[in-house]
Image (cartoon, rainbow, N blue to C red; front, side, top):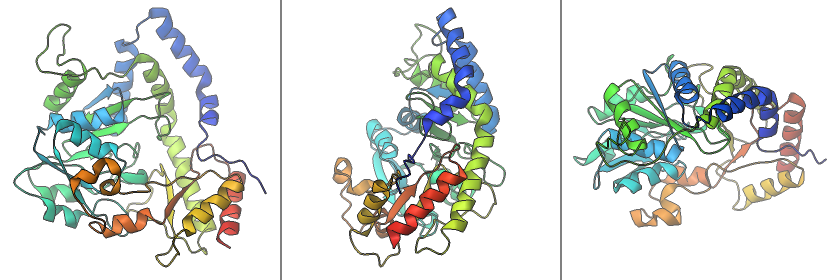
Length: 372
């Protein structure tokens, strides 16, 4: 069997919105308003309403979004930022670019999200922010985290959680939340783009200054800033997709439940689900081999799946402290045993809103054959 099922099918997603995007691009091109408020302001207003926050600010990419969020709450050179070892490297890069010290903690053995108990032990007098990462489409319990950290600002990395809810609330329950609109996200642009949501007028204004050369008015530069703005063409795409995001997320949830049923008898472990039903938006469907799986077993399985035409991924193959870029943090192998253990055993199956039941059945059939 050769199924030819990609890990992610952006072509099918584009086909659904192609006419709407073409009309929007034509509006922008006719007016040459490439950073105009009509599209960008429209998206920001709509995304803030979707998230349930007072403000949404578009920026050029998700890494800038995390950096600006950290800067907005006052993180400076030499300050400490606590974050999980199991995350995409951009979370750490954002703090490093400020000159802050990246302080890592291990993950919860069930969810693979930041271990809240470990956060308490990592806090020091130099901790200026705590940065939980909402991985795979599931939110960290930010209200519980805020109880632990007290007055330390919580800066959420919400790049994988657009539409996720915890007790009815989306990301943004901390001081500020950053997200990525990279094309593969649940809400993705047609290139790099990012955003920030917050209920704070002060933080929102500061982020806008940071992304616009340090000022809110042309030629007025209140602080040293950057060039990092969402453009109108990307806003057109995001507005078209945002209208469909709840429906697309619901399909992801149905697919995830179906995967759970179809894979239930196989020796694969899924991260624990949140207590609140329906709150996980399944940016990724991650599975893990048992702890007694032999070294190299995952590679063998992924090779068989590739040969069968099934696209897969690993999110993530190395914890932050074991990537060459962050060896300077000085954490030895074994510093975060749970994050290290899962990184050697996890892999990700196809998950996107246009994956059909027939395709999903083919994925599962290939997984069964690869595990045999």
